[in-house]
Image (tube, rainbow, N blue to C red; front, top):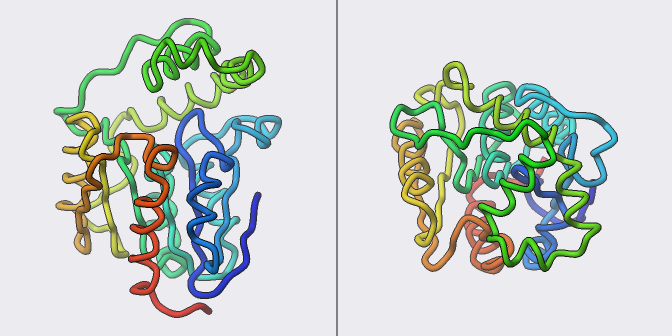
Amino acid sequence: MVCQEGDGPQIVIVHGGLDRASSFGRVARQLRGHRLIRYDRRGYGRSRAAGTASLEGHSQDLIEVMGDRPSVLVGHSLGGVVCLLAATRRPELVTTVIAYEAPTPWLDWWPGGHAPPRDPGDEAEAFMRRMIGDDLWQRLPERTRSDRRAEGPALRLDMASIRGPGAPLDVSVFPVPLISAAGSESTWWHLRGAQALAEAAPQGSYEEITGAGHGIHLTHARLFSELIARVVPRSGSSA
């Protein structure tokens, strides 16, 4: 876990599948002066040895990370679903949720998933190849490719946790303000899913980041940090 000291409400960033806290380093540097926490979810990065966890387990981990300090939760991809679930469990601790392209595979129009390979490592590699392309995957250092493949069991449980049966939470009664965001260059299903979340939440709003794709924290860190910084002052004073 990486803690950045600063003023104002506590910000907690939660990464998605096959990712880790260090990927948000550029975003964190743009948010100097804010109190910010990043951590590797169980099964990933420095938390790989801690084993895997279901979506419910990840939400409980996030609640423990928050402690007793009111927080702005920022979730990227599946991390957004973790934030949504944690906020429904402990709404008194959450001032706002920012969910960037949180997947919504429980909606009937969401595209069907790829048939997973039998080996979790192969599944992780296939996922990464879809996200970044074959050429970039081949250019990654051997150690990086090995680490991603080793995170296959965590990814497999992540995917199973959000694919049902049924939705993991009822967004129509979501108890705190929700900023659901997407990049203009993302897939149609990520854009539609982000809009659907914003429309369903009682205090939901939608923001589209021009020029960004799914990996906004890697390609458009400044724009992502500006979105967070715009929300934080509206979220109350520090406790």
